[in-house]
Length: 183
Image (cartoon, rainbow, N blue to C red; front, side):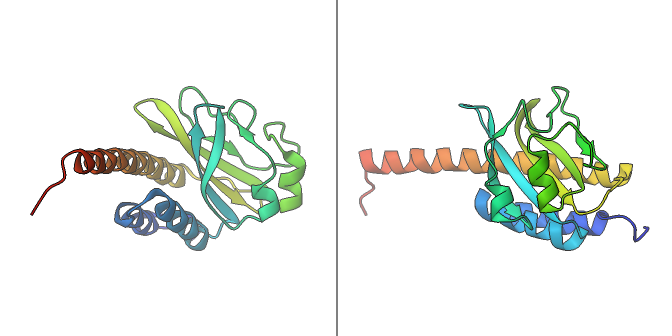
């Protein structure tokens, strides 16, 4: 595999193992974004989840970005980099002159020159996004994009697992309160 690739099978496997070894979404997000930045050599990475109440993307985890950039304002699903209804990634090879950014001046100040945004979906419904930020123009390869798409599927499954696990734990706690088990 060419050393020009930012993600390959070995890096993908390392990141996916981290996804499935984590025991809560915050830890998973922090570890995954850290690994994406450190192994791919990109400027930053963020994992967002959709808040269905106000149609914003809320940060689950981020790495490599300044506090000022992270807190730049609400990220509106319909005004941010468009998450296509057909669940396709949005790739901005060079942000200079792009009209697809919600906060272009903040991105320029942060030194972001390219963004790859992939929706995290579950059964055809967008539940989040994975974004990679690079400090120089980046023409992502089809192979790299394929690995990142697979990663978003893994992230979607993990987020669903964490949600179901929380519901099961909550139900168990409630049942324990109602019918305590006496030893």
